[in-house]
Amino acid sequence: MVSTLEDRVRPPAAAGGPLSTQEFFINMGPQHPSTHGVLRLVLKLDGETVREVIPVLGYIHRGIEKIGEHQTYRQFVHLSDRLDYLSALMNNWAVSLTVEKAAKIELNDRIQVIRTIMAELQRIQSHQLWWGVLGMDLGAFTPFLYGFRDREVLTDVFEETMGARLTMNYIQPGGLMQDIHPNFVERVKSFLKYFKPKLAEYEELLGGNVILQERLRKVGRLEAKTAVSMGATGPVLRASGVAHDLRKKEPYGVYSKVAFDVPVGTMGDCWDRYWVRIEEMRQSMRIVEQLIDNIPAGKHLLVKPAIVIKVPQGLYYGQVETARGILGIFVVADGTGYPYRIHLRTPNFNNLWSITAIAPGLRVADLVAILSSLDIVVPDIDR
Amino acid sequence: MDNEKLLAALKTLEPQISVRENADRLAVTVPCERLGAFMSKLKLENALRFDILYAHTAIDWVAENRFELIYILSSLEHGHSLMVCVSIPRDAPVAPSVSSIWRIAEWQEREVYDMFGVLYRDHPDLRRLLLEDDWQGFPLRKDYKDDFMLEKPQ
Image 1 (cartoon, chains in turn blue, purple):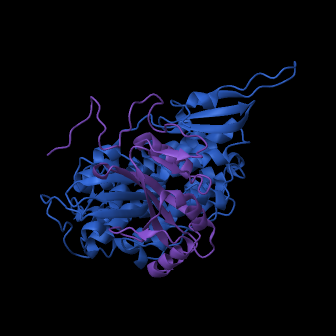
Image 2 (cartoon, rainbow over the protein chains, first blue to last red):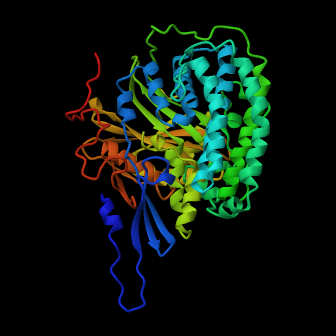
Image 3 (cartoon, one colour):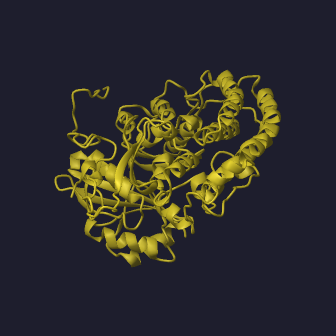
């Protein structure tokens, strides 16, 4: 009933005859640059053609769910940074939102607006890095530098307010760690002014490149039905033509009060996933533009930091749309300040699984393009 | 569909379900032997169409000597959501696999096997997912102990 990996990858018996070929297994990773971290894919190959992909996970499994049982709800926010570190603020928000809903903590408009601005800025920042890395994975080095250069501008803005550049740990149950820096509004505006022409440049530099288009168009198609069944969310699902975005469907923060569009693909190929993310950056800028001049006055933290937040007994599930898809936090509370059990439904875990449906029949080089277009972050898969 | 209508529709599908209290959304408990049939109806029935399985996990109720399996479902088409709960005995943790209904369940069930030791009938490839193949024990069980573990602060 229970098998091992060895059972799966035992090579098939050699066929007889002088001209027969044989399928063989090869490891991609755990130290392969295009797997973006320590992820291992066991490939079953027939020459250059991929027959099957067996992802092997757990190289940086840290047992966050187990550690979470020993942490107060506010302490757990720190761990959520370490899931998908490129969506740290949105992960913080997911935990905060679930706890606030469970403990019935009401927030003021200032907190909601700042959270929404931060989340959208981080979505832009995350997609900038993805864009640069996609270029590098496919052999273009310049985008990597461009992506990081522009990302740096936003990282500085975050650092000024939060004191951290990657694991920000800023949004917490009951509010925000600190109020925004006096320079924040000004700097965000100058970023928007700076980045708009840059985004057009992105599209000219990489998107308009015929080599990139050849590498991405009609490669790695994921049908809408398969994508849903495979649990894919975020840009991966939307590129397949399913307009499912929690910001529209179950609005949280102030998403119901701002105007923005949800870009949706048609083919579900790598190009659509590319295009959806580029367009999302544009929409995120639109959201920030609508909010940045109208941050309401008020307190930034409504629950005193010394208070241990107690959550009444029950099962709670809260979710937000991060840069990579839906992050769900499932909390089993027993009425104390510690969760009895905490489960993380992470977007990358579910998105990566769809590679087993996309990859068979393609070439090894296409696999690199697919991995890049899925935009995985490995700590989020392994937890 | 709102919760009352949804519950009524579920009751006609499967009379043996009961409402699971203390959840933040509609939650129903299904007897383990009815799970497979119930789940495939949830997906296929036109009025329900629970097409996405967001999460599947387990809770170790060690004091009551049982595991509770949790399935968090949603319908992208209709926009309603549901939590399905199943209790299985802790000393014989076997449940039917739903991986033929939602493909993502294949991984989610492997994770639950890895962390809780729940065995799934008819699972195509049941082996450890995050831990090594030769790991001893199931870490998310409440009585799990190893030499490097931190104790919960009192």
